Amino acid sequence: MTKIEIVSGDITRLQVDVIVNAANSSLLGGGGVDGAIHRSAGSELFSACKLLNGCNAGEVKITPGFRLPSPYVIHTVGPVWKGGGNDENQTLASCYQKSLRLASENNLRTIAFPNISTGIYGFPKSLAAKIALETVRDYLANHIEIERVLFCCFDEENLALYKGAVSELVLFEKVVSEQDIILTSKLASIIWNEHYVPMIGQEQVDYMLSNLQSPEAIEKLINKEGYQYYIIYHHSEPSGYISIRQKGNDLFLSKFYLIREKRRTGLGREGMRFISLQARMLGLQRIFLTVNINNLNSIKAYKKLGFQIDSPVITQIGAGYIMDDYNMSLQLL
Ligand code: AR6
Image (cartoon, rainbow, N blue to C red):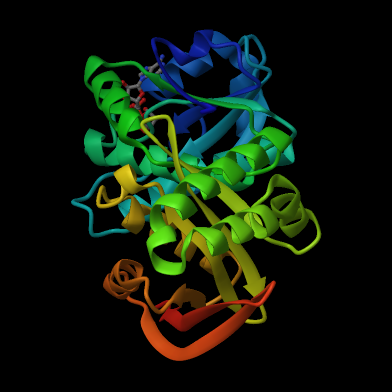
């Protein structure tokens, strides 16, 4: 399921399509991982780097790997830590994001990162690990072309931090395969049965599940109606799912469901952050949803996440069933 792996040791030994170098803005070599990469790749790498005209912090450039086992190297320049008030976090995130984008553009499917900026550049390791993992996780949610991402930890402290952080990482995986669709439908069945039966009764729940949440119905929503589904994994367990779609200038949040045992574990906030990110990436400033007026816990949870109630709305769902809902919306800042 997960494409993220934590490995220890020397990045210059890894057999992946591309390794990332934590370089400096001259791109002409240095100490740390940069020095190790230049030594293993040989002097041709230095010659290739001389032609690149340097690189700004947060940016990326690509060269062949020459004598390295990996055919390519992406050179990125991390931020120098100056206390945190100089956009260090954003610059570090940009290193990871732009490296992945460059890998995608070059059809490179497996990539290894060192712990950028956490050596000579002095970035706090725990914060750097969190930014690295979350940035990569968010990119992978929408880029199925990347097959494997290795975080290569050279020092024991980083290795322990990454192992801890990755086991807590909430993953959002895009629903693409038939298997994913079947899993989504199963999650729907669990969640509707535990959550909606007391609200709208078993009969209506059964009707909705077989008509609107069957694998065929979900497949149609994805392939014909422009919905994107993401399964939420927590501690490697499928824990819920999200379904979104652009409607005009807004993002329509069609489904945001968590199985009962995963509620009140912070997944709501994590999921909302992910949904807001999808809205921003589409250039949208507002998220809206409908929620059953008797679904008091969800209404409360959405309010806590910043949503407001706009108006009541009645939705016909077929076979004489209706849903008595509220429209709720969240304006993104
Ligand atoms: N494989 C994997 N990781 C390594 C290796 C290796 N062979 N060697 C060191 N590390 P740093 P920065 C880890 O200092 O902080 C250079 O001089 C190391 O444990 O290499 O981004 C450049 O030219 C640490 O966790 O990079 C720049 O001037 C991580 O790599 C400056 O350092 C990053 O440490 C960049 O500083």
